[in-house]
Image (cartoon, rainbow, N blue to C red):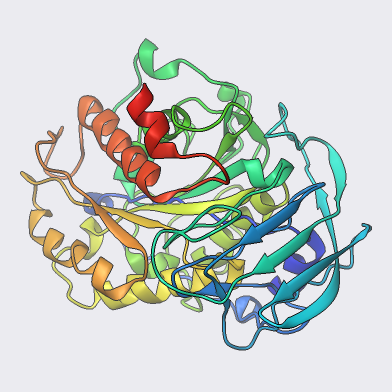
Length: 404
């Protein structure tokens, strides 16, 4: 089955990605490539947005509007679905087309912003004329992510991409294990000891990644961001960090030569694996952003910036994410990868709506990995930056933060 067909069958698009990092010490260049992922977009393809605004996925049972966004070249702005659903309307610029969408959630624990079990979507999505500046989720503008409406649009999904520092090395303490039913994780692997099955949603608790991983930035990112969200919003985390991975493991059409990928290591490319997980998440939520922490295994390589740029562009296009926020974390300042931070700080100039998360003042367990206290702080910094970037319909995250 081609990627394009999978997208149209799901009907809903998730708009947030978290990109985690693994550390260089465990290096080895894994690469991904698969002709099957060379998806094309068209009148029956996915809708992706470019420029400062971003497009919105269909909202379950509601109407969603995204301002300041434009469809990417080669698309008509129409999302077509072969699923069972009632018809809605999608209009982009001056063109209008009918579209049917269906949303289905498999293995969803809890309500996830009002979406649970299997449901049909009746939605109308309007895309504005483009422009720059902060983006409003579901209504006006926002130089980043746009979501809104009800149901799936209130289940904000984030992709966690990177190496071992995204996975997290330090083991959790009791305070780290405190759960919130509004924060979910898409199981990273089959972990009997954690009672988790790959690809199903569970209430989040460390480890978010491998069965024996530790606390990474995703944990405290979600806890921090949730503090500023309305009570009817939830967060979904999609962990895709790979310990020791070079950026080549994640690139589209680059064959994989190493690193085991859950659950059964059958993936031809790492990119294919990430896309499959993101598509699963889009069945129940809206991808609102991407968290990324990677670079130790490409330490000092100047061409890393261009490779990350291509990776992010491919993700946004193939998943129809528009310019959702891309947050890239710096390397440990006192470690062997500190020099790579010059390239991390070049990302905002190469990638639209990209932002750097500082590692200043953080401490480590060795020359590559952050310790537990610093992972908590790093995750908090990711969360605080996302609070600045996300704007919900009729709700100010920044004012909610100030009021606390």
